[in-house]
Image 1: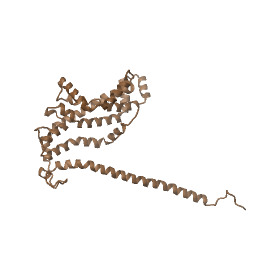
Image 2: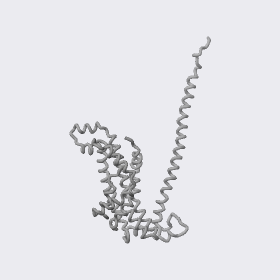
Image 3: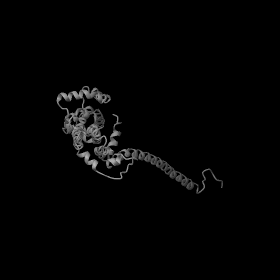
Image 4: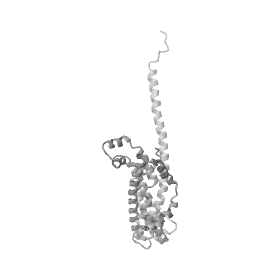
Length: 308
């Protein structure tokens, strides 16, 4: 009998299927191996950056733990031969030009109060710009965004004159009020409020809820990730603020931590261990906040690129 083109060797189909299966199985392995090399290279690069970031911090801590003669001894070494806590005790108890413990308390109060008030004001302003309809809303939002381009140094003199006329120099009002309601926070929360489904708000209106009730019970819980990110950024900015407190505060008992550290450095320009101990003490809250809320910090950086 003559064979036709449709005739196939009995084992040809099975062999072809086996070869095809092996090729398909090999492709993910190669892709995974290639991805693994990229992951290793990225991890190594990030590890190098992390080490470079940790070296100054480690240098501050180890210097604060050294006695003064060992700090100025040559050759310089990072690991202390003798560990002492006297520098930390001196930094927290002395009050010749700056009280670090009192400045720490002032910075804590200012940062917490400013963060809470900023969240409240920015959230209400952002919701009004996102959901309420009124004349000039777009112009107002454009002006708020344009204020980001204004250098903060330009507003220092007008703000100082305002607080001087109000009699609020060297007070908590002068430290807290200028930092409230930044344009960045209004923009960030407005973009999130625009993403809240209107159906939820319409359902609340049908149930008889007013505008503020809808804002507080419907919209606000849905933007908690953005609120958390804004809270972290506001706290970090307030804690590190230096220029404005330096100008507006003249009393030692009202100094914030950055200003107190600057004066402390001048007072202890030779006692490096005490200065390093004060710097290490001031960095503790920032390190704690970073390690606890690092996911929210990264998320907040990613959220700044959202579009309407």
